[in-house]
Image (cartoon, rainbow, N blue to C red; front, side, top):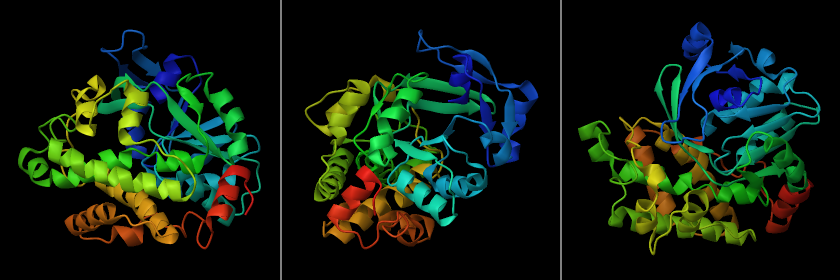
Length: 351
């Protein structure tokens, strides 16, 4: 994102939590962006004026803060940025996963932030992309349409208006609960990785993650999880996209079944599986995507047995308790709320 914004002519400051990750960028003063399959996209060396691990240097005077860390880093970013946030700034989580804007806002409130800052989240990351080498990235595809929502929802139009100066793909989402519950990564990442554990370990990820890792049987499990996710959203009065609907919206990929739609998506071609099981498809997407769906389901009386089974298997694989580590209703600031109170909070900001 930093490279793409730079090549479009926007001034960019790049922040990373780990200074060592910034060394290649600082040495060449740029990030090399490769887009060989996208003839209309810029590519080449994108100048990066500031590459820093100092949050004050990154935040001060910025109009928009595009947070592109895994969701496990949102708490850290919120805590580190809180002292330096200023009136009028917009923080966009790319993406929020499930409950990102809710958690981020809850942390800012706990930190006593009084600045007029708007927190928003994208439903998914705008790119299908990979880091190829230090300081070198490749964008395989830019998604067609990415819903963005602010907390509260009435601020969304202004956020989208400002973002579309750079990214016309961003469109207004209904609200942050809708973008959170339409987090399709919750369906496409944890279960596929867990169910391909043996293959990942034996081949070190030497297979196409989506096109080979999702067989008809795996796709049926994904569809069962997807139905549970949609049911939790419906319990709060929000109509969620199914995974098949999302594939059509984001990639123009259609099919009679989820398996067919996945295989109709050219954007997934060439994306390899993770090399190890210690990767964000579990470490991020289980606690930050599946756990909040299951937690909200418990609070609202909606059963999520297949989602719970994947959380349990992932916890066994990594020898930890992802339910205890993850975003619960309490950590989202929603504990004890009924449906009416949840809807009022995300739509109007009232508690």
